[in-house]
Length: 259
Image 1 (cartoon, rainbow, N blue to C red):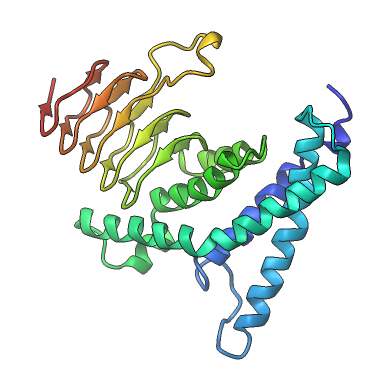
Image 2: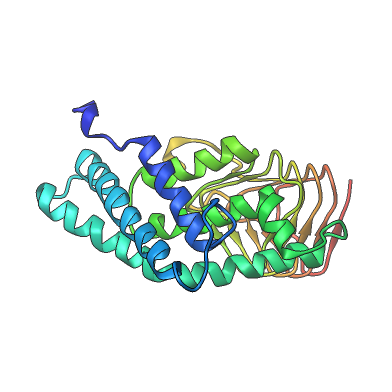
């Protein structure tokens, strides 16, 4: 197992995640008052804390799990560069999350404002964490993205693997019990409800490097309790998948699937 003292600290990762979410949603996540006089200081302080804490935890993950030969110094430099890249990506991540928020406002008659959605919708929080974790995942960071995704899974009941690729204007309504697998690909303007599983037909270990989870094309709605399985399964553009359905093969565009 190696020296567990040098393994990433889950609390530190979750603390850094809260700081990242505060950058994405300034003024929504913490009690401090933001105005023109202190905004630069507050944001600067937050960024410095993220860089310090997250760089250390990513370095530990790289040293503990990687077979790289550059050692701790090389891993620290790589970790720091990854965190700096994440900070630079925050405006783009925030842009996508605001599109997700607008999709929730447009798709839920019960929603009254984007502020209400940001403050109270678990689906938006889960998507926000996913977009942060996914950036780290695709940049080769081990363990840390899974810590982030499992934190929000425990909080919301929404389980999105950080490897899943999710397009713009994504809306998870209610959310409890949603599962989205590692190799799932989701297009733009997709809406899913509680209890939806986008999973694998086989859980054999020799499938690890293969696409195991479905592709959901643009403008698809998937209702509560639907299960869609398989790496070769494609749900075509504009489809509606009814509640409690079981889908293991591709569906042509603009189809309606019911029990």
